[in-house]
Image (cartoon, rainbow, N blue to C red):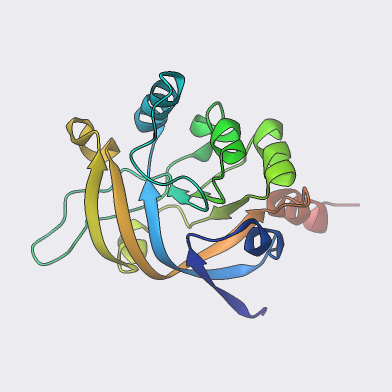
Amino acid sequence: MSEVKKLSAPFSEEVARSLKAGDQVALSGVIYTGRDTAHKRMMETLDRGEDLPFPLSGAVIFYVGPTPPPPGRPIGSAGPTTSGRMDAYAPRLIALGLRGMIGKGNRSKEVREACVKYGCVYLGAIGGAGALLSNSISAAKVVAWEELGPEAVRELQVKDMPLVVINDCFGADLYEQGRAKFARK
């Protein structure tokens, strides 16, 4: 079993380029949430020449639509959504300084190429483990588009969120590596 790498968000291109597909990560710091509708609004905001409602440079976006928080908790269940739904938007955000994305499932060739070119990583979270992942979140606040409910952009404070690098800055893909390793010869 490999060593878990401690990672603090936001992080630099140099940090992103130090990670390899398959690395286990414990992510702490400030990250942002965003799903389909929020990403569409981000593009509209950028198209108008306006700043996004959060700093993009070095940022990590978690593809999640959390459930309402139970009493005494900052957030409800926070499981990853299918990342491919953000593939149309991700390369533009990566080119503007996004350093990490958290979700589940494969990414497009265009997203993977942007990760290589600009220094970004795609981190996988375990689908179906939203209650477990929410234990890593100590604070949550809406920072944009509150009317979107679960799809509003939130700023999350996380501590040791368990993740794995799926796509690194060198073009490696953990899913492809796994299929190749177990393919019948």
